[in-house]
Length: 419
Image (cartoon, rainbow, N blue to C red; front, side, top):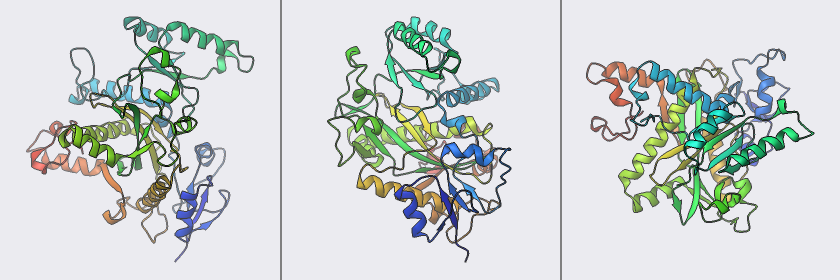
């Protein structure tokens, strides 16, 4: 049997150990590979017309050509806003709004503006609610770099002035930022703020096929949460990024400030109820599926590609989940031994879904893996299956009744109805 030849831009043990344990052969990205775990910076070269490189049927790669439509902060927001507007235009019940003008079912991203383009719109909104805190993030950076909180317009003017006064970059090169309403009422555990990192595998955008990983985790801040305006500059209170928290003196290297999602579910079941916990995770699944649907029409759906996204979600104290951002290259560095085990399993399970075990990659394959190869993944949404189910049931049930979050359908034995 032919052995798979792999290339990787990352020198990470969770990747390389997986490849070696399968008996795969390492080659350089310039050589003839079957499987390439590429850095996002190299994707453009692989798919650029200038390179003249053409992928063969036996080659798969871990990013879609224009994955940035979901993973760049400004593009994600732009695409979700467009998706909602399109549904509204079509009179789709999913785009229903309440009396205040908020989306009833699709309100899962905080109010967000692009800067500098939307500066005037932002100022108008700011003046309506001058006591609101906002969070500013550079669109093209990760790991918490360049993020800060503002609650006065003067802070924004200073930022703008500082940027323009820089001798290194003319105003035209100023980086785009997103500014979002800060979720200042986060759900706290032990007095600390946390967010969820969930892994979502997409093997096709048209039709949409995606899987969710059961071994996600919560990332906790090291310092107790305090909404006081004096604490706005203390990133150990506000930002959950491990790259920031591990600089703090209260960082615990043994557990890395992390909890499994399983622990979160148990905590919520014991403090709120199983029903409340199930509803929250249903709504998280709903949010993920619709964020993917929002970009499905604009992503280059190349058959050679798959993507393992890192979703960052914050839960507020009303147990409402908010999508903060989606990472194209979620960290594969392990901060603890349990982290290393989990990430090794994640990569192993991704490979088993993308390439049937014992086979060579083949893009002509239907991309319907055997259930025993899911590992810790669960099928989140399969558009083909959903469309078939819908046409089968249309005579009995209006399709829209199967499409709302947090509702469970007795006919399906309690299964979540957004699937």
